[in-house]
Length: 113
Image 1 (cartoon, rainbow, N blue to C red):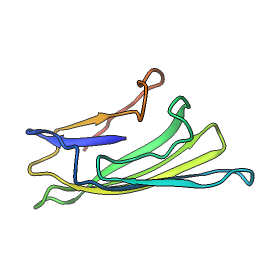
Image 2: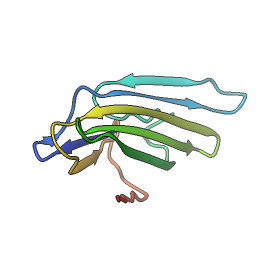
Image 3: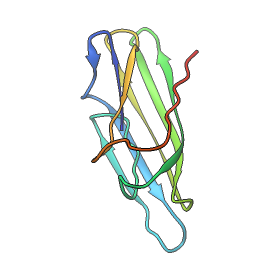
Image 4: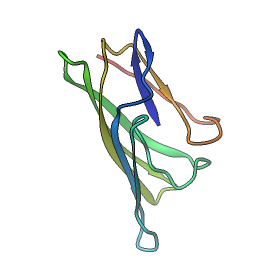
């Protein structure tokens, strides 16, 4: 999950967010919604996922951000989703939160314009 925040801190509520995971013909789809962050639905928190998440400023008057993500897991599951969150001021911070355990491998790159 990814949470965003402004100068007042990270926001942990009032997200509109959902994510899904689909796989090959031998697997079933699963999905989830949440109000606590931008959610990425994975098979297991111990698996490695690869892909992109893009945060786009939808409305600068209300500091409303839209999230979209497309990823893959174990080279056979596709993960996708999106969400919406308004802040009280401009976006200045974000945090990556695993469902369980820790972020213990790989890399995260943040770019902004």
